Structure formats: structure tokens, C-alpha cells
Amino acid sequence: MALRSALMNVMTAAARKAARVLIHDFGEVEQLQVSKKGPADFVSAADRRAEQILMHELMTARPNYGALFEESGEIQGSDISNRWIVDPLDGTLNFLHGIPHFCLSIALERDTEIFAGVTYDPLRDEMFWSEKGAGAYLNHSRLRVSSRDRLEDAVLATGLPPRRRENRGELAAAIDSLTPQTAGIRRFGSAALGLAYVAAGRFDGFWEQGLQPWDIAAGIILVREAGGFVGEINGGNTVMISGDILAANDRLFDNVAKSLRDTTFNRG
Image (tube, rainbow, N blue to C red; front, side, top):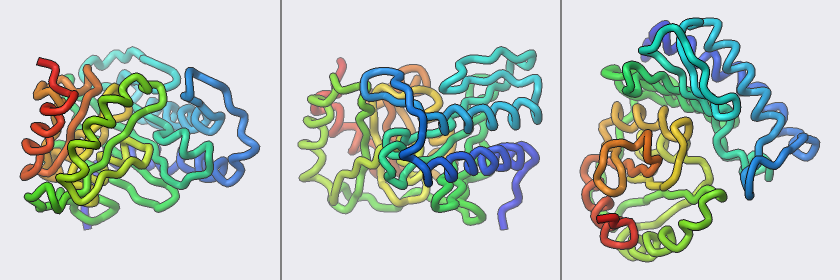
């Protein structure tokens, strides 16, 4: 059985406490108060309540840490080395439509690098967690990325957030290119779970453009600690800044990256 550090105990306990709100409100999704945050980008009352619980739990446990929350924004801490990066509900559109595929995610950034991450799917009670140098886990089981080395056997996943509809032509071109080369392409509507599934070997790769730090921070450490590669689609290494991410197992990363760059993602 994997032993969790004090830091990981704080993160997983906060995730489970906030998840109770999501589970309760998912069961009453038709009664939720919903406000429009932008074109086809919604935020629910459950989202805000979960964030308040996460903020209280994390900031109480580590009061000097800074934080970046999706809804509340940046919180400056006296400890400038450590910052929480939190998404209280990834897959909001799924949640609001009663589709049971969403999660919450917590990452700790230490000295500008992702040090620890938790992605929790409350409906399946799947806690993906990782710390730098300690491996990646699903509940108590060690995770490894898949060992597939042929694109024709691979299942890839992608996403197109509604606010990024201008990229639909690029996404269509990438899918048209990769579909005949792979076993299949999936889009489930949660980048955080997509990355966690790469770490678990369920997907062989995941790519998406225009994401926010809270969408990908926990997933980055999960994939890397599970033996996979994470980088920008164009070959760069500033994923947290650009939000353009490709994650895949170590055997397929280069091939997927080349296929994406050879279509419409080539920026050079």
C-alpha cells in the first residue's frame, strides 16, 4: 500500500471534502443556480461552493502558501516558493448536463515547478495523486503509462473548450490526420481527467490547446511520474504559460507530436 506524505494527506482530504458538494449538487443538477461567465463557458453554484471549501482547507493547512484558484484568482502568500493551483470543477459543461465525467484538481507548484498533484473523480471514487520523485498512483495502486509503441494501436484523446471555438478548424485537421493512423480518438470534456487517464495507461496520449494552469497542473506531474512525457505541441517547454499541451507515453510522444506539427499546429 502506498504511503502518502503529510502534504498529500492535506491535498486528498481537501479534495474529498469538496467533492461532497459536487456529488450532492450533481444529484440536483436541474436546481442549480447557473450564471454565464462567457460564451458557452458556465460556472455553477456547486463550482463556487467547492472552491470555497478547497480554499479553506488548503489555506488553513498551509497558511503561508500562495494560491491560484479558477474562480477567485490569485492569492499572494508570504511563502513565495509554494503556490496551490486549484480547479474545483473540471468538466463543468458535463456536470451541468448530467454527464458523469468531471473532477476536481489540486496541484502544488514549488519554485515554479509542479511538485505534487491530485485529480479526484468523485463519482468513481478515483483519486489520482503524485509527488515529484515518488511516483503516481490511483488510490493505492502504482500507475504507469501505457507501453504501446505503434500509433495504429493507440487511443488518443483531445479537447476543445467551448471558449476556443476559433480553433475548431485546427482540431478538425489534427483529427483528420491522426484518425487513420490510430485505433481511435476520444473527446470526453475534462482535460484534467484526460491527463490522468494518460498516466493510468487508459489513453496513450492527450493534446489540447488554450488551457489554463489549473486545467493541467496536476496532470503534468501525474503523467511525468507515471513515466510519460509532457510538452508543448510545437516542441516548447512552457506548457503552463502557453496552455498548449501534449502528453503521451514515452514511446509515442515524438510520433504524435510530429503528426500534430505536420498538420495545422506547425507554427514555425
